[in-house]
Amino acid sequence: MSVQPAPQGVPAPGSAVPSATGPRQVAAHREAVEALLRTWFAAQPPARETIPLASAAGRILAAEVRAPGNLPPFTNSQMDGYAVHSPDLAAARDRPGTPGTVRLAIAAPIPAGRAAPPLLPGTAAPVMTGAMLPEGADAVVPIEACTPDYFLPEAEGTVAVPADIPAGQFVRRAGSDIGAGTPALPAGTLLGPLQLGLLAALGLDRITVRARPRVLLLTTGDEVVEPGRPLGPGQIHDANTTLLRSSLEEAGAEVLRSRILADSPEEFIDRLRADLAADAPDLVLTSGGISKGAYEVVRQGLAAQDVDFLSVAMQPGGPQGIGTVEGVPFLGFPGNPVSSLVSFEMFLRPALTAVTGAPWPRAEVPARLTAPLGSPAGKHQVRRGRYTAGTVEPVGGPGSHLVHALASSNALISVPVGTEHLAAGSEVTVLLLE
Image (cartoon, rainbow, N blue to C red):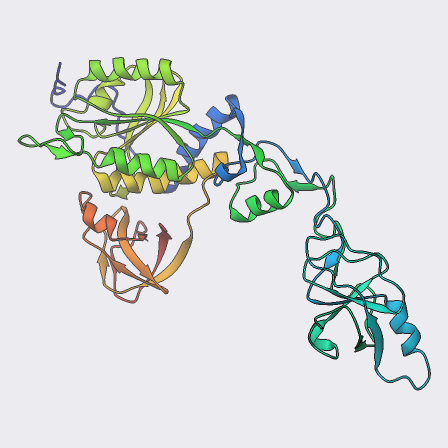
């Protein structure tokens, strides 16, 4: 059954009555999206799973990690040089008339990855960077400070070292980075390369993380056809599913199911209920079918649900849906691809960061426009742009269908409400997408 148009002058089923104060502001809608997710995750804490460290990039630690051992695990040399016993140098330094160097017998070399024999008094042991410091040694003299300033091929002869070497010089003490049992990373840490490197250095090959937010993604429209299939009259290929699915996955979410639904409110709500029962998502996200037209399948299909369909003072991306469906958080984005992407970047991505800890926040930086921009009155306009070294070039026009311009961009340019004209050279805030 196809959607029937609403009678003239009567709001479509499920629609919100227009506010007397006008459209919702961007910041207020962002707060509403964050509050929706925060309420859900407070009542439904994410499950935990233990995964290989190699698969943990972008995940969130579910529990505090304490160091299972010392790091470094043994006292070692910070550089190539000679391991010495500083009292040997001090005795020579305090002897009247002694020059500024001390000559010591060369002991057997100590390569990295080998146990070191004790250092005998009056000797210096060639030691490599990272190699274990021998018992009896308490300092390292860099090879370039010695005479000769290179290692001899055999452990024989003598080497002259400066007499003023203090104890502890160029020595990495066991546990000096982190001691055994010490907190290494707190619960809630977003795992990037630096954090994963620490866990690997501690010898951990598996880690317990929070389960990803689970998203049910639906695209609507009789005119929308999957890529790879031929187009009929008036049809277009579906870009939204790919655009939103890849954006969600990049943001650390798990997309449980993505599909295109025809313009039938009955089919939409039936399929949605079946998917909710089968997949138990944390969020339902739709694109299309939420505007004020006569054939708006999402708006009409969710007439009995706790969902508001409203206008946000933003271009593109003004129409928005927010609420719950069968108790599960719901967001409805407009059907134009650029509008969907802008809605994701302006509302959902920052809410996921604030509530779950992932993904990393997008960087916002000031930039100078390379060309003038105009913006409609009363709207927060978001334009595509190409950011380079403090400047941003607008790419394409304001149209929400310009996918090629979107693909050529690496930033979103914000023109806030109240600013209708910006000259070239004006400073704007840009959201970096890379």
